[in-house]
Length: 141
Image 1 (cartoon, one colour):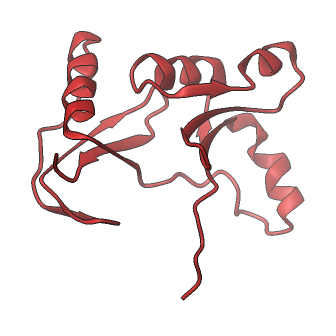
Image 2 (image 1 turned 45 degrees about the vertical axis):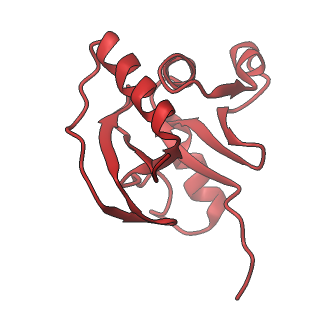
């Protein structure tokens, strides 16, 4: 079996600055290249998930150019079903609190949904400012 690791996921967003602020303020993720993007020196903003994994917040207006660069017409700009972030039970509770405090809609807790580490005792779904769906979960503890 190969020992691959997830490097990054690209989400299409209308406003990378607004999205980076959401991911920073609500999820507590560190924005990368935000100042460079604001200066026009970077084509997108990223947020760090782990030391080895990021999410790129790419402006939707870039999809046609990327579509052409990939050499596969119609392949860029497709939405992702959802992005799942695993965290501790304490981080999960804190995130739910931040979402509630911000008046941000979030679905009910769900139990025993399957993921990379097996069944998670609690999981919930919510959207980012662009309608990308995020699942938050913990595996116990």
